[in-house]
Length: 86
Image (cartoon, rainbow, N blue to C red; front, side, top):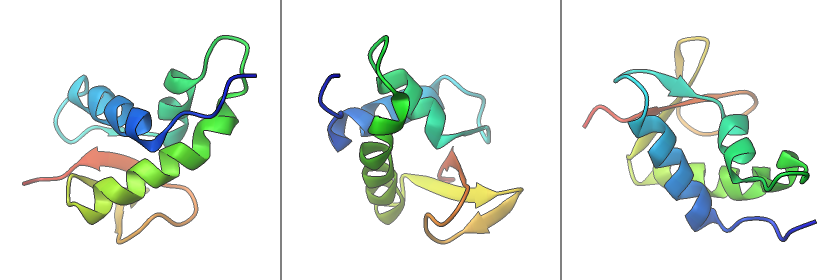
C-alpha cells in the first residue's frame, strides 16, 4: 500500500474537481479520496489528507460546505464541497 497523500495533493485535486463542475455544483469528499488513491489501494486511507485540505480551504474562504442544501460553518458529519461565491 502506498503512503497516504499529502494535504497539498488533496487541495489540488479538490480544486481541479470543482473547476470541472458547473458553478454551484458540489463534490463529495470521497470523490477526492478516490481520485487520489492508486489502483488497488483503499481510497479511505486518503480521507485524513482530504479532511485537512478541506479544512484549510474553508478557513481561507476558497470553498464552502453544505449538507442537504444547508450551509455548514465547518466540517462535521457528512458534507458536500462547493466553490465559494467570492
